Length: 280
Length: 266
Image (tube, rainbow over all chains, first blue to last red; front, side, top):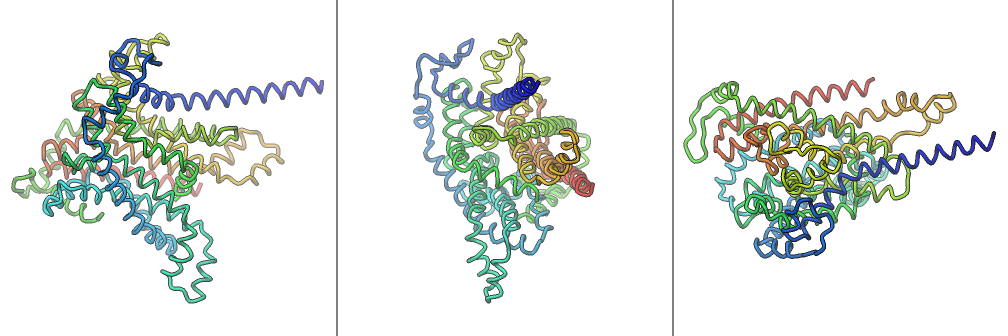
C-alpha cells in the first residue's frame, strides 16, 4: 500500500518533469528556428538557398556571403556611423538621465514619470516632421548629428525609467547621514547614491544602447548615402537584392551581432532591470 | 525637446504645406479631408485589427511562458537568455529573415506546412493573410517582453500568504486565483499598457516586410503617416494624422491607466 503510494508520487513527479521539458521546448522552438534559419541562409550558396525542398543541412558551407556584404557596401563606414550615433545618444542620455531620475525619485515627482510615459506613447514619427524641418533650417541634414540627436528621444526615457526604479529601491539612510554631515544634495548624489547605483547604470546604458542600435526610423529619414546606420543599410540591401538571400541573411547577422553579444553578457541584469522598472 | 515638436505639429496641421513650397493657412481643412479619406479610415481599421491581435496573443503566451520560467529547473538561466533573444535582435534585420521565410514558392514556412500536411499559404503576399502573418512576427518579437514583466511580478510574490493558505488547506487552484492572480495583476496591467502603446505604433516590421501592401491592405496609421510625410511630402496632412493618432493613443492609455488604478484598489 505504502509502496503503491510512493510509485504513484514518483510517476506524478516524472510526468511533471516531462511536461515542463516539453513546454520549454515548445516555447523555445520558434525562437531557435528563426535564428537557425538565419545562420543557415547566410552560410549556403544561392543554389541551396533557392532549392525546393529547402536545404536544412548544406553539403557545402561558404562564407562568401559575408565577404560580399563587406565588399559591395561600405559596411565598416555604416558600422562606424552606428557606433557614433548610438554611443553619443547613450552617453548624453546617461549624463542627463541619471541625475534627472535621482531628482524624480527623491522628490517623488510621479507626474514627471507620467510625462515619460507620454513620451513613450508619442509615435516616433511625430517628432520627425518638426525636427526634419528644424534640421533643414540648421543645415545639419547629411551629417550623423541629427540622427544622434533624435536617438536621444529613445535613450533618455529608458535611462530615466530604469534609474527611477533603482533609486527608489535604494536605502536612503546613507544619503541622509551624508546630508546631516553637511553634504549638499549634489554631493550626496555624486559620492553616495551614484557609486551605489552602478549596476542600475550598466543596465540602463546597455538597454538604451540596444534600443538605439536597433532603431531604424530616425536613420531612415535623416540618413544620406554616407551617414546610414546599420539597420538602414540592411533595409536598403533588401530593396536592391531581392533574391540574393545569402548576403541578406549575412548582413542581418552582422547588424544584430553586437546586441546579441551584449544580451548574452548581461542577460541576468536585463531581466532584473526590466522587471524592476516595470512596476513604476 | 518634447514640447516644441508638439506646438509645431499642431501649427502645421492647420496649414496646407508641401515640403519646398509655401504654406497657406487652411484652418481645419486637413482634418475635414481626413474624415472622408477612405485610405485613412481603412488604416485606422487595420491598426485596430492589428493591435487587438498583437496585444492579446503576446499577453497570453508571455504570461504562460513566465509561469514556465518561474519554475526552478536546470539550465533555466540559459534557456531564458535564448527566449529573450528575439526582443533584443534588430527588428529590421529580423523582418528581413521573416520576409524570406514567408516567400510563397521558396519560403521555408510553406515547406514546414507541407510536412504536416497543410496547404501552402500566401503569407504577406495576399491581402487576406498579410495582417495575421505580420502578427506572427510581432508575437515572435514581443512575447519575451511580456514574459519579463510578468516574471518580475512572480518573483516579487511574498511566501507568507501561501504558507497561511496551505495551513488552511487551500487547493492549488484557490491559491492561484486568490493570491497569485491579484498580486500579479498590476504587472499584467503594466505589460498590457506597454504592449498596447507599442502595437498601436507599429511601423518598422510592416515597412520592412511589405511596405503596407499588397496595395494598402496592411497600411496601419504609422505607415500611412510615413507615406504622407516622406513619400508625398504632405506635411500639413501628415501633421493632422499625428494629432488624431496621438489623441487615440492618449484616450486608450487613459482607459488602461484607469483600469490599472481599479486593479490596485480591488
